[in-house]
Image 1 (cartoon, one colour):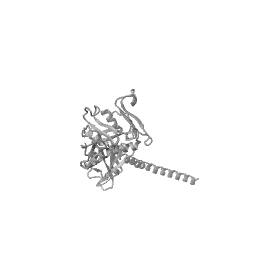
Image 2 (image 1 turned 180 degrees about the vertical axis):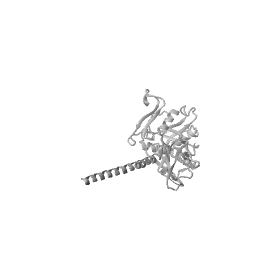
Image 3 (image 1 turned 90 degrees about the vertical axis):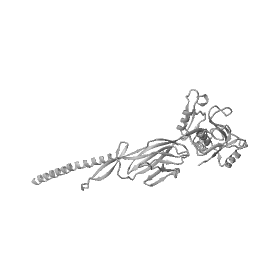
Image 4 (image 1 turned 120 degrees about the vertical axis):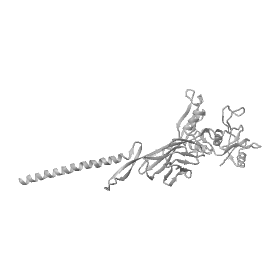
Length: 384
């Protein structure tokens, strides 16, 4: 009996000791969890982030404290306009608040989302210190400006026809990063274009190739809308755009172009099958390098003679996009029909007058005529 009571008292003592141990451990566990939460939350604040510098408290006991430094990534200009064939600087700068006493090892990434309906970002350039690497078609054409500390603006030279889109400047410091987006657009002109074989002959890829062969690229919806809105472009034939949609601009409503009950605007056929469906194209061209001119020749020329005469003059027969660019940006005005590289006959008018076509400025077209017929020729000479 006494032995049983003694064992019961011993069990009670042990239980109380275990309870005391658990009670003493629990505050320590809570403190550890709270510290982890606070450290995790300290790494991000609002739309920016804080990275943490570890420093000794200087009393020799090995304790460490954190001092927060905030990273800012900014661009003073988030929409940049440029011209094809020229160069452009996409601004991006970063800084720390408060300023850091010594340079940090940050990585710079520039990524690009083209205006072609592509959702995936493509690499343009990555830089770490003095080391850098460019990618794809950007190789040899891009660099960082580095004019001041923190300046990582992207310089592209020369600009190619399909360089437009959204560029993202990303600064990476340790495990965290911040970025800013800059949109690049071209100043230029949109023109409708169809196959020498007739209307509605291009699938999407053929339309894209046709524009590029004529010194241009497929227009974006924004570019088509702008020329409709500002210049009242009116064209009752549907054409491919860069995002794979098919649209056309109407300035004057009429039965043959959607009906009189529809308001003027850009008509939209939506996204079409890029292989099976066939339409015309809306091409976009920007300014050009060099000179476009009407070759003064003593005789009229057939198409093959026209090509050869431009070569003999140290030039090449002009492309349709180059002719449009010269008309728009250089004010080329010539009331003489001439051969163009695609086998069409055209001429540019900036000052409408009698015997030079309609009363509006524009590039007149006689279409694709038999190539044995005799006309003048427009040439393009590159000047560096």
